Length: 377
Image (tube, helix red, strand yellow):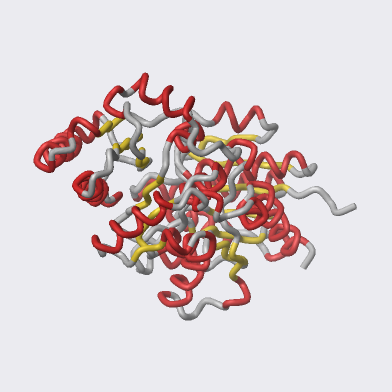
């Protein structure tokens, strides 16, 4: 039986987000496999969830952008030595630098292996280059792998491992299409979405980079084509971004679609939101490293329409090519929406077997295999 490992994951905090979610998912997998999982961060609201899995948390502010953060190198080094760490897995740039410096102070025999995960397409720089220095560099998509090799050509391709983010298929079960109950439930909460025409769904944070303006323009065009289309943007309404929300509302009014639009806070029932919809939009203006929305929506049996760049374009080209649209081509976006809405089979384009690579279990198993590879090298 392989020996139990002690794996220490490093990240700024445990508040919310994809990096944090992946950290908890790997910690859970480690514990269930009989290993020891330790997470070092400044803490946050997800710490109780981490501890419930049987993992451990050490509070150390290794992600604060300040020269004072260098003082955490020594306590981190002492922690790694005291706990007998086998693997140090850094998931963010500043924690990676702190971890790298801590490891440099340990002798070869006692030095843990260093793993990094490139979760995003950060601006190329010497600061970002630390994420390509792992003995193994986990890339969350082929898009990220290509990005790393292009901007950090000294990186040995043999050290890279592409491990896509994963979802729990049970959390996003196939839904009937149309799902009249799900649509009625949504309309009860948001009366502007009441109607028999298609419901477009665009989940995402309230930031200009997510492409909300493109979604509003598409809605106006579809309605001009005679469709009683409506649009729901869960997650776009954020008190901290009130000016941006006001800008979207003004734009919707100018386009004449304000009364068929719901800009709301994030929903805690995103699977039900997918089920209620007829078409899911992913229109980020900036290429993303991955596109979890694409996998979630396809798992529920809903078609996705998005700009064909970054991780989103990669997923669409593989799983549902008819939803991949040349970036910022408004005419192609309009035609793609009509085609997907007219084809009631489009939501089933990605069968469960094709999504197996993007399951949570596959992501966990592949990551643990990287740890095992290093520990027994």
